[in-house]
Length: 174
Image 1 (tube, one colour):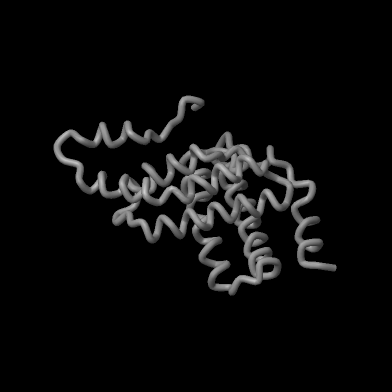
Image 2: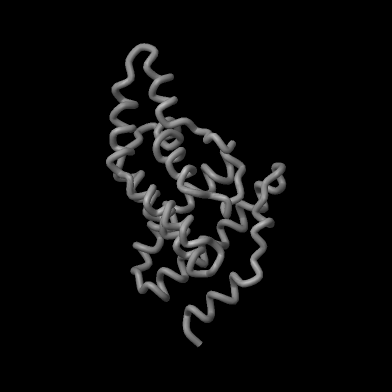
């Protein structure tokens, strides 16, 4: 039995609605389920992709931060409802204002892990490839995020509102 055959049944039957968050109990339950998915990602990266444990761990750590701090704890969104706009809100705004020293190196690591997590879900048949491709593309928009970080540090006077409005934390569909 291949590693892929071993992993796939683990995720078969996963119910995406089990990741809906309506209250604190749901949030804690979904957080634990997310940790389990990240463990499975780690297994996939080390067994299927033959990544070194350190590399796989870095990717999982990046995805963990995006998912558990932003999507679950802050947004209280279903991690299966994520699209490219969530990544842009996170990387272009939330990460910058919530991190004492926002920097592109750390952000790039988080985004690499996030893209890999969604590619993993796609390989498992749990996400549409078109959505994952959009997420991955947004994770690669590092020049944009570099400009957002630089613009944040350059804010003077009442410039925060203009900075905030250039990449709001909500979208039209919220």
